[in-house]
Image (cartoon, rainbow, N blue to C red; front, side, top):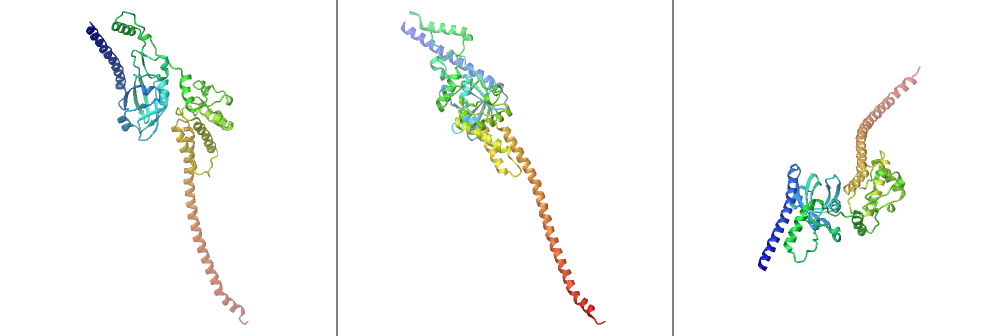
Length: 380
């Protein structure tokens, strides 16, 4: 009897295991189907989400062969575009083939869980379109592990006494299949979890308004507040500088810092904003005597800010226009200077010729003078 029961347990375990594997295979099959429909002009790969990808440090390891073939050979920013057309800036480490930074926000915003499959399609250099295929297995997140974002087994109700555990497991499984469309995975509260992470990390205060503030809601400078990852930066920047920055944001109808890489140090972000204002003021003060090397330096600084997510492209466009005009005028001035040099050369030659002729005139005058004297003084 005991042997028969052990055989039944073994049979049930293998059945349950094969069922789980088939479900996992189903999610993989759906991910492969999504990948198969994508254009082959753009390379892609499928990635299974592990616990380390969607919890704790939130580090996503990318396929080595894919990275070697399609991604830059240096560290940089990789943009992730989700299916809602919202984009995130992630930090890419070429040494570890690893994505961090904005990946944490992408994972939490899209509620990724262990066992989900992601299809990454490289649509531009360093820019992925990401398709999410959820794994709908018998799992849910319990409250104690809500921040970990990985699946935990469903807590089964206590089994009735004197009941066969194998039969109970099977019945629970069938009951779950009949109700799986009615179940939903609990959603993490971003105001507590996401901002607490940065608050604890940087030791700065956070604001629950961070996810609610939009520039279109700002009616004037009095309502203008600067948030970076929940940090309030107003105290880090002088009022006059903030006023000028507000005018820059107003000109573009957006916060210029709203797309900064997540996890950026608050003081660094404040420094970038202040430097952007200084460069904008310097651009306004440009004249024909401004050294182009200075403008090139401003452009390089803004390019670095842009790679971190700062919206400063309009300033770089203005600098390039100024440089283009300066070079065009410089070319014309150089041509005129060449003409002037040639004219001066000709003038020096003419002056030399005039001097020679004057000397000849003087020589002739001296030669004829005795003749005039002889005639003038001759006897009457």
